[in-house]
Length: 159
Image 1 (cartoon, rainbow, N blue to C red):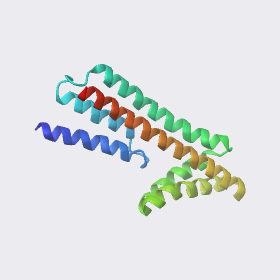
Image 2: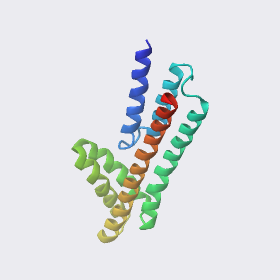
Image 3: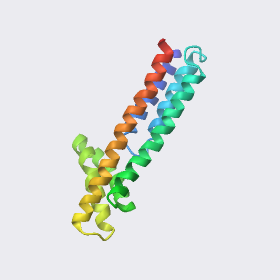
Image 4: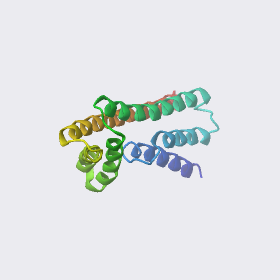
């Protein structure tokens, strides 16, 4: 039965990493739950509370960083909330078009969202680029922080 628990924990962690790209999947919380479950499997003998607290703090920082990066990218270029909403919708649509869709569709969505906010095309493109760059930097930060979460667990488990 222990192997089933390990597989479930691994699935949670992997789903958490999918959440970096797919909006609506709570990435860091799933990674945390997977790692918490993995620590529970051996009654917290190898991974105690201090590493779990550190993992939880890294997870919380992941959530904050994601929101702040997108907002700062958008704000820096004067984008409206429509650009952010368009970028999120573009990300969802882009999932159906593979890697290129995931990269390009958020930008297109941000531009269209900003254009709907009654701005001209040049301003919309600028706002779209800023929003897209903010999302991209936020995703990079999420990858790094979620890898740190897993790294803390691995170090605590094996050392």
